Image (cartoon, rainbow, N blue to C red):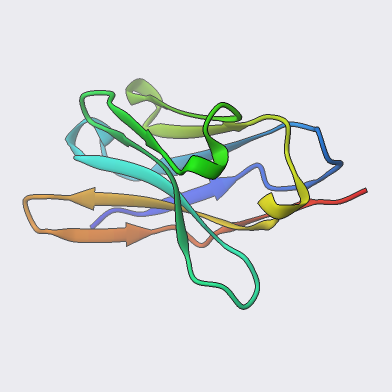
Length: 117
């Protein structure tokens, strides 16, 4: 069982920056893949970025060059640095953890990001 708690969502103007944090209840070194997903009203939940236990990263095309995912194993925390935010980035952002040994996905409760002037 893995519990995930996100924080850092806020209202920000276009062009601004935010950093989201996701703290896991388990040692994230043992978690195969951690990631961030987002869901806008009336839309499906989409991948934003992932990072493996080995540090390999993957990004959605829409955020490449603007967002950076990172992990601090000592703090059991994954971050999403978001720069040059756009109104279309507005969504609830969810942290995800996937364990291959049980093929199980865990989700946080989500944090709201609103980009508006």
